[in-house]
Image (cartoon, rainbow, N blue to C red; front, side):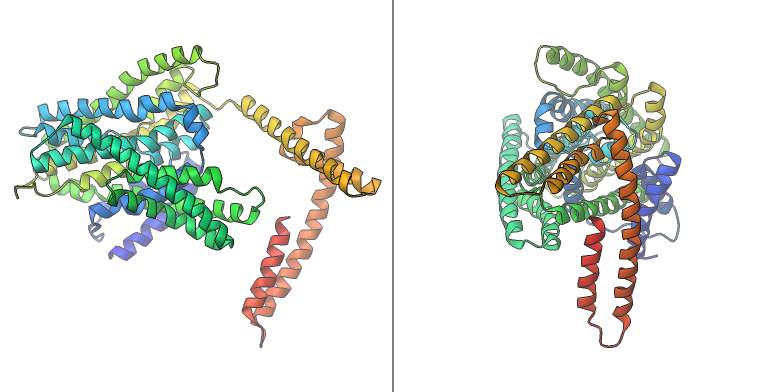
Length: 528
């Protein structure tokens, strides 16, 4: 098997792992990690030969962009306090604790190298956390906090990692310089993200065509990441800023085709890239086995101790942090999404899985220092990092569904239904208001006006059938049955039309481009 065949296997596994995971109640990223580990120990599978410096730029931009599409800037702003406590403060605390333990148990490990190790394994993976949590029906407030933590903690961790690596390579370290680098990195990233977001928004207006606009959304995250890194900013924060800007300002309510096609496109990209990323994590078992050759007991002990520190620090931090957030929240008059019970706090604790960023940073550790000497204990650092990733990702990922079920943590379905009903009311009200405006300008026949008024009501009741009174719901159900029958017959008619047009594609003299254009028109008509 060569590298290309291995990539195909990972892509195929990314698709198959989704229904398999749904069938057995297991997270697809964890299944892909297990698949990668199984491939890693197979004799016919080659070692993965990807330059470490390309892993983050190749995988993180689309994964981050896909994750941001599911949230909004206002959601981040509303949860800034718990996100800060997790994404910034907890990363610092975890890095320091891991560094202290690693410096103590690994003979000869310099403190700067230990800090680099702590930085690279400090951030929970945003893709793993949201992919796993999103399948378990958790309360939206928990998913929002996990998304915010996962998206912003990489910013802090990667900057700290680069500062620590630079200290090892150069032999110099300055605390104020490190703080300045962190601030400048964030400022540069936000500026680049806003500029590229604004420019991409204007360019998409000029492109017009949905296919070109969706293609632009694929290029922009990469451009944002690469440009920020070139200018010594945070590539992760730049992508987040660009994605949030586009989600806020590049959405046209009437651009239905672009929205539907873009949603499908990014679902596909998210599934494939996530599968490949976690498959690569499992494939790194090759390097771990080679590194630990002859030293299994000692190195497994180091990895287990470090993993224990990572898991324990998260719990010891979350308990008082959640209590403090709840106390501060009680004094505020706005609705901040926070864990409301110890059960939810435990679920958040067990959701701190490491993943793609940690692997990429571990592999990107330089081979030599600035003086040409080997980087101190590089192999040991990579093995420990890989051990922590496997323990948190596989162990926690496989047991999180059981823990959620055991603790009975579930989404507040009543609250979600009420919000859905409120949106349905607003949608119907907006449609009725627009109808009244049209009636003031145009002379509509009474029959047509009544028909349009019923359709305005139907807009809301189709979204939330519970919003109408019982009699009106019954009338709607009768109309819905009639509409389903009409749509069924119309669907069969359109199907016959599509078959006839498609058959013409193979006829002599038929222009495939014209056939496809007519077929696309019928397909769009079928969506109405």
